[in-house]
Length: 79
Image 1 (cartoon, rainbow, N blue to C red):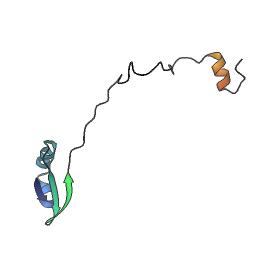
Image 2 (cartoon, one colour; image 1 turned 120 degrees about the vertical axis):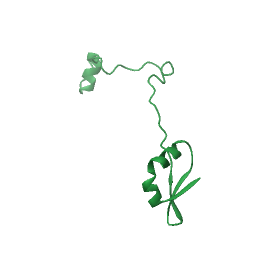
Image 3 (cartoon, rainbow, N blue to C red; image 1 turned 45 degrees about the horizontal axis):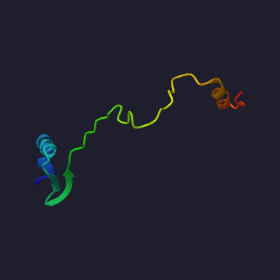
């Protein structure tokens, strides 16, 4: 664990960020009282096709609507 004062954290911020990214616990203190823990933000990646093959068919929302469905959508009787 690394404990540094606010003043030291201002001058060594890059080094402290690197330490936190390596998994080291970094605590910033005001005077002798610990007040903040510096932790990395977990980076998640977006995966396309994550559910491909696990979910049934879905409508293609870019295709034109069937005329009967369009009529119902617009308040008609679906004829």
